Image 1 (cartoon, rainbow, N blue to C red):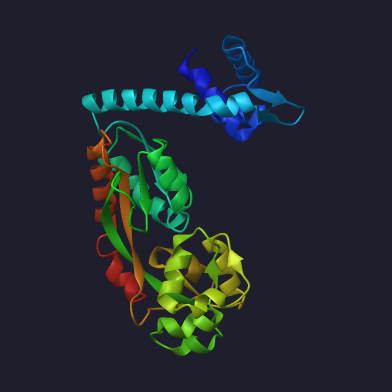
Image 2: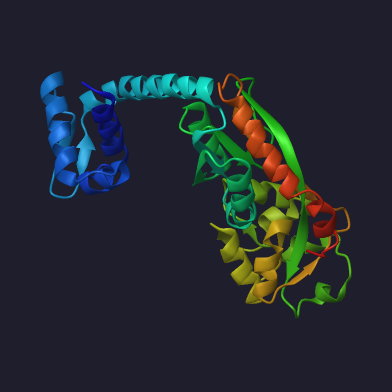
Length: 301
Protein backbone atom coordinates (compact mmCIF):
# COMPACT_ATOMS: atom_id res chain seq x y z
CA UNK A 1 0.00 0.00 0.00
CA UNK A 2 1.31 3.47 -0.85
CA UNK A 3 0.14 7.07 -0.64
CA UNK A 4 -0.36 7.32 -4.39
CA UNK A 5 -2.97 4.55 -4.32
CA UNK A 6 -4.71 6.15 -1.35
CA UNK A 7 -4.92 9.42 -3.30
CA UNK A 8 -6.49 7.48 -6.19
CA UNK A 9 -8.99 6.01 -3.71
CA UNK A 10 -9.93 9.46 -2.38
CA UNK A 11 -10.30 10.87 -5.88
CA UNK A 12 -12.54 8.05 -7.06
CA UNK A 13 -14.67 8.26 -3.92
CA UNK A 14 -15.13 11.99 -4.59
CA UNK A 15 -15.85 11.84 -8.32
CA UNK A 16 -17.50 8.38 -8.49
CA UNK A 17 -16.24 8.10 -12.05
CA UNK A 18 -12.97 6.54 -13.24
CA UNK A 19 -12.41 9.04 -16.05
CA UNK A 20 -12.95 12.14 -13.92
CA UNK A 21 -10.92 10.72 -11.04
CA UNK A 22 -8.03 9.85 -13.37
CA UNK A 23 -8.09 13.38 -14.81
CA UNK A 24 -8.03 14.89 -11.32
CA UNK A 25 -5.01 12.72 -10.45
CA UNK A 26 -3.19 13.41 -13.72
CA UNK A 27 -3.02 9.76 -14.80
CA UNK A 28 -4.68 7.60 -17.41
CA UNK A 29 -7.96 5.87 -16.62
CA UNK A 30 -6.47 2.35 -17.05
CA UNK A 31 -3.67 3.20 -14.62
CA UNK A 32 -6.09 4.37 -11.95
CA UNK A 33 -8.39 1.40 -12.51
CA UNK A 34 -5.54 -1.12 -12.16
CA UNK A 35 -4.25 0.49 -8.97
CA UNK A 36 -7.71 0.59 -7.40
CA UNK A 37 -8.15 -3.10 -8.21
CA UNK A 38 -4.77 -3.87 -6.60
CA UNK A 39 -5.80 -1.91 -3.52
CA UNK A 40 -9.04 -3.92 -3.30
CA UNK A 41 -7.07 -7.17 -3.61
CA UNK A 42 -4.69 -6.05 -0.88
CA UNK A 43 -7.50 -5.07 1.48
CA UNK A 44 -9.64 -8.06 0.62
CA UNK A 45 -12.82 -6.02 0.15
CA UNK A 46 -14.63 -4.40 -2.76
CA UNK A 47 -14.29 -0.64 -2.46
CA UNK A 48 -16.48 0.40 -5.39
CA UNK A 49 -19.60 -0.85 -7.09
CA UNK A 50 -18.83 -0.45 -10.78
CA UNK A 51 -21.23 0.21 -13.63
CA UNK A 52 -20.73 1.50 -17.15
CA UNK A 53 -21.14 5.11 -15.97
CA UNK A 54 -20.31 5.29 -12.27
CA UNK A 55 -18.14 3.84 -9.52
CA UNK A 56 -20.13 4.15 -6.30
CA UNK A 57 -18.31 3.65 -2.97
CA UNK A 58 -19.36 0.48 -1.16
CA UNK A 59 -20.20 0.43 2.54
CA UNK A 60 -16.70 -0.92 3.20
CA UNK A 61 -15.19 2.02 1.32
CA UNK A 62 -17.26 4.50 3.32
CA UNK A 63 -16.02 2.94 6.56
CA UNK A 64 -12.37 3.03 5.45
CA UNK A 65 -12.24 6.36 3.62
CA UNK A 66 -11.56 8.46 6.72
CA UNK A 67 -8.51 6.32 7.52
CA UNK A 68 -7.20 6.84 3.98
CA UNK A 69 -7.78 10.58 4.19
CA UNK A 70 -6.02 10.79 7.56
CA UNK A 71 -3.01 8.86 6.21
CA UNK A 72 -2.66 11.15 3.19
CA UNK A 73 -3.14 14.28 5.30
CA UNK A 74 -0.51 13.17 7.83
CA UNK A 75 1.99 12.34 5.11
CA UNK A 76 1.47 15.72 3.41
CA UNK A 77 1.86 17.49 6.75
CA UNK A 78 5.13 15.64 7.30
CA UNK A 79 6.47 16.65 3.88
CA UNK A 80 5.24 20.22 4.35
CA UNK A 81 7.03 20.51 7.68
CA UNK A 82 10.23 19.15 6.15
CA UNK A 83 10.04 21.63 3.25
CA UNK A 84 9.39 24.46 5.69
CA UNK A 85 12.61 23.62 7.50
CA UNK A 86 14.49 24.15 4.24
CA UNK A 87 12.68 27.23 2.91
CA UNK A 88 9.16 28.20 4.06
CA UNK A 89 8.83 30.60 1.12
CA UNK A 90 9.31 27.90 -1.52
CA UNK A 91 7.16 25.10 -2.90
CA UNK A 92 3.45 24.51 -3.30
CA UNK A 93 1.06 26.94 -1.64
CA UNK A 94 -2.67 26.17 -1.86
CA UNK A 95 -4.67 29.38 -1.44
CA UNK A 96 -8.46 29.35 -1.17
CA UNK A 97 -10.42 32.42 -2.24
CA UNK A 98 -14.12 33.29 -2.21
CA UNK A 99 -15.91 33.66 -5.60
CA UNK A 100 -16.83 37.34 -5.17
CA UNK A 101 -13.14 38.17 -4.73
CA UNK A 102 -11.19 35.74 -6.92
CA UNK A 103 -11.79 37.12 -10.46
CA UNK A 104 -11.07 40.70 -9.42
CA UNK A 105 -8.19 40.29 -6.94
CA UNK A 106 -6.11 37.52 -8.51
CA UNK A 107 -5.19 39.45 -11.70
CA UNK A 108 -3.93 42.29 -9.50
CA UNK A 109 -1.70 40.19 -7.25
CA UNK A 110 -0.33 37.36 -9.41
CA UNK A 111 2.55 39.42 -10.82
CA UNK A 112 3.57 41.01 -7.48
CA UNK A 113 3.49 37.57 -5.82
CA UNK A 114 5.69 36.05 -8.54
CA UNK A 115 8.14 38.93 -8.20
CA UNK A 116 8.28 38.89 -4.39
CA UNK A 117 8.15 35.10 -3.95
CA UNK A 118 9.66 33.53 -7.09
CA UNK A 119 10.10 30.06 -5.55
CA UNK A 120 6.46 29.85 -4.44
CA UNK A 121 4.07 27.70 -6.50
CA UNK A 122 0.68 29.33 -5.98
CA UNK A 123 -2.40 27.11 -6.46
CA UNK A 124 -5.65 29.10 -6.13
CA UNK A 125 -8.88 27.31 -5.18
CA UNK A 126 -12.18 29.18 -5.55
CA UNK A 127 -15.12 28.23 -3.34
CA UNK A 128 -17.62 29.60 -0.83
CA UNK A 129 -16.54 30.42 2.72
CA UNK A 130 -17.89 27.31 4.45
CA UNK A 131 -16.24 24.98 1.92
CA UNK A 132 -12.93 26.85 2.19
CA UNK A 133 -12.95 26.58 5.97
CA UNK A 134 -13.64 22.85 5.72
CA UNK A 135 -10.74 22.39 3.30
CA UNK A 136 -8.47 24.52 5.48
CA UNK A 137 -9.23 22.42 8.55
CA UNK A 138 -8.79 19.21 6.51
CA UNK A 139 -5.28 20.36 5.45
CA UNK A 140 -6.43 20.55 1.82
CA UNK A 141 -5.60 24.28 1.74
CA UNK A 142 -2.70 26.16 3.29
CA UNK A 143 -4.55 29.47 3.65
CA UNK A 144 -7.72 31.18 2.47
CA UNK A 145 -8.74 34.71 1.50
CA UNK A 146 -12.07 35.45 3.18
CA UNK A 147 -14.35 38.40 3.88
CA UNK A 148 -15.55 37.25 7.32
CA UNK A 149 -14.02 36.52 10.71
CA UNK A 150 -12.64 33.01 11.19
CA UNK A 151 -14.56 30.89 13.72
CA UNK A 152 -12.83 28.74 16.33
CA UNK A 153 -9.44 28.79 18.08
CA UNK A 154 -7.88 26.41 15.55
CA UNK A 155 -7.72 29.16 12.91
CA UNK A 156 -6.05 32.54 12.92
CA UNK A 157 -6.35 35.41 10.47
CA UNK A 158 -4.88 38.75 9.53
CA UNK A 159 -6.80 41.65 7.91
CA UNK A 160 -5.32 42.71 4.56
CA UNK A 161 -7.45 45.55 3.22
CA UNK A 162 -10.86 47.18 3.51
CA UNK A 163 -13.10 46.83 0.47
CA UNK A 164 -16.02 49.27 0.37
CA UNK A 165 -19.28 48.34 -1.32
CA UNK A 166 -20.75 50.42 -4.14
CA UNK A 167 -24.35 50.80 -5.22
CA UNK A 168 -24.83 49.32 -8.71
CA UNK A 169 -27.82 50.59 -10.68
CA UNK A 170 -29.22 50.53 -14.21
CA UNK A 171 -28.67 53.91 -15.94
CA UNK A 172 -32.42 54.64 -15.97
CA UNK A 173 -32.99 53.87 -12.29
CA UNK A 174 -34.58 56.71 -10.24
CA UNK A 175 -31.65 56.67 -7.80
CA UNK A 176 -29.01 56.95 -10.54
CA UNK A 177 -29.10 60.77 -10.45
CA UNK A 178 -27.98 60.88 -6.83
CA UNK A 179 -24.32 61.50 -6.01
CA UNK A 180 -24.47 59.32 -2.89
CA UNK A 181 -27.02 56.63 -2.05
CA UNK A 182 -28.27 55.52 1.35
CA UNK A 183 -28.07 51.77 1.70
CA UNK A 184 -31.68 51.46 2.93
CA UNK A 185 -32.98 53.14 -0.25
CA UNK A 186 -31.82 50.12 -2.27
CA UNK A 187 -33.75 47.56 -0.24
CA UNK A 188 -36.99 47.58 -2.27
CA UNK A 189 -35.49 46.22 -5.49
CA UNK A 190 -32.06 44.94 -4.54
CA UNK A 191 -30.78 41.67 -6.00
CA UNK A 192 -28.75 39.33 -3.81
CA UNK A 193 -26.67 36.20 -4.18
CA UNK A 194 -27.90 32.76 -3.17
CA UNK A 195 -27.36 31.26 0.28
CA UNK A 196 -23.77 30.43 1.13
CA UNK A 197 -22.23 33.63 -0.20
CA UNK A 198 -21.02 35.96 2.55
CA UNK A 199 -21.75 38.91 0.24
CA UNK A 200 -25.45 38.03 0.43
CA UNK A 201 -25.45 38.31 4.23
CA UNK A 202 -23.39 41.51 4.13
CA UNK A 203 -25.77 43.08 1.59
CA UNK A 204 -28.80 42.27 3.72
CA UNK A 205 -27.07 43.60 6.83
CA UNK A 206 -26.20 46.87 5.05
CA UNK A 207 -29.58 47.46 3.39
CA UNK A 208 -31.91 46.08 6.07
CA UNK A 209 -34.00 42.95 6.42
CA UNK A 210 -36.38 44.15 3.68
CA UNK A 211 -33.59 43.36 1.23
CA UNK A 212 -33.88 39.65 2.04
CA UNK A 213 -37.45 39.54 0.76
CA UNK A 214 -37.12 41.79 -2.30
CA UNK A 215 -37.24 40.08 -5.68
CA UNK A 216 -37.30 36.41 -6.60
CA UNK A 217 -33.79 36.25 -8.08
CA UNK A 218 -31.08 34.53 -6.05
CA UNK A 219 -28.01 34.48 -8.27
CA UNK A 220 -25.22 31.93 -7.93
CA UNK A 221 -22.51 34.38 -9.01
CA UNK A 222 -21.68 38.07 -8.98
CA UNK A 223 -21.40 38.26 -12.81
CA UNK A 224 -25.02 37.05 -13.00
CA UNK A 225 -26.09 39.86 -10.66
CA UNK A 226 -24.21 42.41 -12.78
CA UNK A 227 -25.90 41.18 -15.95
CA UNK A 228 -29.33 41.41 -14.32
CA UNK A 229 -28.64 44.95 -13.11
CA UNK A 230 -27.40 45.95 -16.57
CA UNK A 231 -30.67 44.57 -18.00
CA UNK A 232 -32.68 46.81 -15.67
CA UNK A 233 -33.93 44.02 -13.41
CA UNK A 234 -32.94 45.75 -10.17
CA UNK A 235 -30.02 47.09 -8.11
CA UNK A 236 -27.31 45.47 -6.03
CA UNK A 237 -24.25 46.12 -3.91
CA UNK A 238 -20.90 45.17 -5.36
CA UNK A 239 -17.43 44.96 -3.80
CA UNK A 240 -15.19 47.79 -4.90
CA UNK A 241 -12.79 45.52 -6.80
CA UNK A 242 -15.64 44.58 -9.14
CA UNK A 243 -16.17 48.20 -10.20
CA UNK A 244 -14.36 47.77 -13.53
CA UNK A 245 -16.50 44.81 -14.57
CA UNK A 246 -19.67 46.71 -13.60
CA UNK A 247 -18.71 49.80 -15.55
CA UNK A 248 -17.85 47.68 -18.59
CA UNK A 249 -21.44 46.38 -18.44
CA UNK A 250 -22.84 49.93 -18.52
CA UNK A 251 -23.86 49.94 -14.87
CA UNK A 252 -23.99 53.17 -12.86
CA UNK A 253 -21.94 53.06 -9.65
CA UNK A 254 -22.45 55.33 -6.67
CA UNK A 255 -20.76 55.51 -3.23
CA UNK A 256 -22.83 54.60 -0.18
CA UNK A 257 -23.82 57.05 2.54
CA UNK A 258 -22.83 54.79 5.44
CA UNK A 259 -19.80 53.42 3.57
CA UNK A 260 -20.78 49.79 4.06
CA UNK A 261 -18.06 47.34 3.10
CA UNK A 262 -16.07 44.29 4.11
CA UNK A 263 -12.60 43.46 5.35
CA UNK A 264 -10.63 40.97 3.29
CA UNK A 265 -8.39 38.79 5.44
CA UNK A 266 -6.09 35.82 5.06
CA UNK A 267 -6.74 32.84 7.35
CA UNK A 268 -4.65 29.78 8.20
CA UNK A 269 -4.38 27.01 10.77
CA UNK A 270 -3.00 28.13 14.13
CA UNK A 271 -0.24 25.49 14.08
CA UNK A 272 0.56 25.62 10.36
CA UNK A 273 4.36 25.07 10.13
CA UNK A 274 4.74 27.46 7.19
CA UNK A 275 3.21 30.51 8.82
CA UNK A 276 5.98 32.78 7.42
CA UNK A 277 4.80 32.14 3.85
CA UNK A 278 1.22 33.05 4.80
CA UNK A 279 2.47 36.31 6.30
CA UNK A 280 4.58 36.98 3.21
CA UNK A 281 1.68 36.36 0.80
CA UNK A 282 -0.59 38.51 2.95
CA UNK A 283 1.93 41.35 2.99
CA UNK A 284 2.26 41.34 -0.80
CA UNK A 285 -1.52 41.50 -1.21
CA UNK A 286 -1.92 44.20 1.44
CA UNK A 287 0.80 46.30 -0.17
CA UNK A 288 -0.75 45.95 -3.64
CA UNK A 289 -4.15 47.08 -2.34
CA UNK A 290 -2.87 49.86 -0.11
CA UNK A 291 -4.81 53.04 -0.81
CA UNK A 292 -7.52 51.14 -2.69
CA UNK A 293 -10.22 51.48 -0.04
CA UNK A 294 -10.38 55.27 -0.06
CA UNK A 295 -10.66 55.48 -3.82
CA UNK A 296 -13.31 52.76 -4.03
CA UNK A 297 -15.45 54.34 -1.33
CA UNK A 298 -15.68 57.55 -3.36
CA UNK A 299 -16.31 55.73 -6.62
CA UNK A 300 -13.05 56.85 -8.22
CA UNK A 301 -11.65 53.37 -8.98
